Amino acid sequence: MEGLGPVTLQVADDECVCLTGPSGAGKTRLLRAVADLDPHQGEVFLDGVSSLQVPAPEWRRRVALLPAESHWWGDRVGEHFAAGDIAGLQALGFEPGVVDWSVARLSSGERQRLALLRMLALAPQVLLLDEPTANLDPANIERVETLLTDYRCTHDAALLWVSHDVAQAERVAQRVLRIEQGRLAADRPGHRQ
Amino acid sequence: MIRLSAVDLAVAALLVLVLAVLGARVQRSLGSRILVAALRTTVQLLLIGLILKALFAHVHLLWMALLSMVMLLVAGREVTARQQRRFAGWWGFGMGTVSMFLSSFAVTIFALVVIIGNQPWYAPQYAIPLLGMLLGNTMNGISIAMDRLTETAWQQRGQIEARLMLGHSWEQASGALRRDAVRGGLIPIINAMSAAGLVSLPGMMTGQILAGSPPVEAVKYQILIMFLIAVGTGLGTLAAVWAASRRLFDERQRLRLDRLRAPPAER
Image (cartoon, rainbow over all chains, first blue to last red; front, side):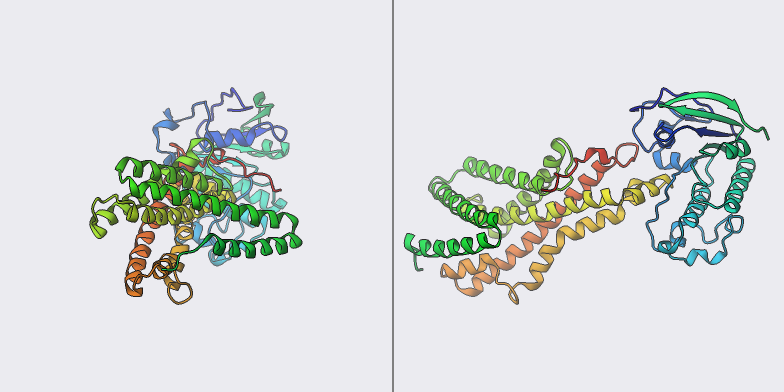
């Protein structure tokens, strides 16, 4: 992949690895390659099975990417969820009526939190999170961190979390990795849980 | 039928000249563009007239095939030129041209053999006008549809990729896009069929009437042509949109906008 790698990285079940690094270092591109959204040369394995052996849509449901900016194709929030009732609404501070809300009237923070729920509704095994709390106020940052940590524990999920916030990395991750100029640099242990 | 003399045409040309002068006062380049276009019409139509005259004198399948191939390639080039974001390499030209070939040639041959049934089936008096009208209309439909498809894919890449990320297949992620492109390609012929006779008198029918055909005979031919054009445009547009939307995604169902060329810079 242009300007990125070679990168070798292993994330265990029930582990959260934080990726940090300057803008343009290749964090987003790494996540997109793992989700198989961009052509790439490396190989990605989930439980020993290569991404190439799994149909692409199935792979992306299991290895889900939450991009920094969320996009919505329908007019109402509810159209973007398969099931009628959405898990985690209350945990992120929404009332059930949010399904009838118009997407155009959501704030950027609301969009970001709803995009997270939209992804979690698929019950993925791996979460690729591209700055999931970038547009949120402190109270909502805490809600999202708690929700994601709960999800990791209950689903044995592996999390790859891009964050610029060192304190956040300490809070949520077991390991913190730095990407610089497309390469993985210093590997230091984060807060163990 | 009243034959036109060179003087008759010269009088009409004088009117175009007046228009060009008026156009040049609006915008300098407009005047010269009118003149160049009028000149192209004259030369191109005279050439095709001479070619048809020769073709009528020597009816042979080989000559017909040659002329129709030239018409097809020119139409293919035109489809490519009308794309803002065309597919890079031969794909841009190839997909439009193959779709046009499949639809207009199939429909033309079907009409000649099954409906008109003259001898030989490739007689240029019927085959060339039919193919020309089908190619011209299919070309419009395909170029509108492909242009709309690639342009919308570019504008809505965020939404399309959001759906891919949520495990939607490429068909689901591009469904709205493809429907919109097909509709765009078919609207001109649907409008033409709806307005025919009320607002516009189609050119072919008017031509036949001018040449002395009984109006009802001309009308019957026009209805046939409208139907053939609708079918040809429809099939060609469907084929082109199918091929182009396949090409927008790769074997791992990734949106591959890198396969499109950037639009030419605004002048």
